[in-house]
Image (cartoon, rainbow, N blue to C red):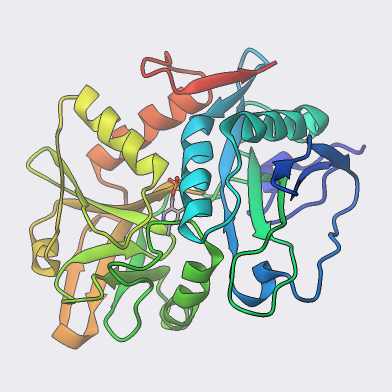
Amino acid sequence: MKTLDWKNLPFGYMKTDYNVRCFYKDGKWSKPEVSTSEYIDVHIAATGLHYGQEAFEGLKAYMGKDGKIRLFRWEENAKRLFRSADGVKMAEVPQELFREAVFKVIELNRKFVPPYGSGATLYIRPLLYGSGAEVGVKPASEYVFLVFVTPVGPYFKEGIKPVNMLICRDIDRAAPLGTGTFKVGGNYAASMRAIIAAKHGGYSSTIFLDAKEKKYIDECGPANFFGIKNNTYITPKSESILNSITNMSLLEIAKSIGMKTERRQIPVEELAEFEETGACGTAAVITPIAKIVDPDKNKIYEYCRDGKPGPLSMKLYEKLIAIQCGDAKDEFGWITIVE
Ligand SMILES: *Cc1c(COP(=O)(O)O)cnc(C)c1O
């Protein structure tokens, strides 16, 4: 293989050598099977296509200075996929099968793990969908669980850069008692109109409010929201957002560096009180927010006036990244070495 230009990798799909597939049939999961094809055969009546029986995960493997590949909190992704499966009534993937498939696909594609210091990582995408044929609305009796990987460049090529966000009041991503807490494709489909409209307006993404009262902050497109004031890390509590593993980790890190933390409803007006705000998720870790525009209320909230991320956001970001790539001690027990 010609060596990849690791420093200029996009954040997108690139073909690797192998993926791994498991099949659920007659109430049982098969062992992971290795494939070199990028394609799957799908039944024309598969419930994954028609009724959105589908869930996915996203996690990263990092090459350390010591040449060891590190996985970050994979058990949390396994648990979340298990909950998402139940959320749309699919066969759950046992944690052990998840582990086997994820580790196998990394080992098989070892040469695609970007080197230490390149800023690039190996993105791992587990996918579960209803493959069995149904025409009436009911769960399939067959499922496919597959895992592929793709090397991805750093989200911010020129270093971590603050972005602008638009508050959206006329489209909801998820209802309070809906599927917002599950990582299912349907939530993404529901959010696309709003995200594309925001991007057309020059914003990085949309901030969704709680669907019922439109009073509280829910999520930033496909990432969780946080605000910082008085040395306190504050993130929304809501029944319609996806529990981000990055956010859970930032809450722990915030405590460990002497910050206070709160998980509670965040009224939109409180945006005026924050010293720093940001979005968080596996892809970019932290995306600092420079400006939040609320067109319906004629309000603009500004942060990072010097164009740079806030100091506490940076501190949280640097500590998390250092743990992930093995530069800092794994004090929380979040890392598994891929042998
Ligand atoms: C995946 C996802 C996130 C981020 O979760 P991480 O576990 O941190 O990657 C946030 N919001 C939504 C809607 C998501 O689907």
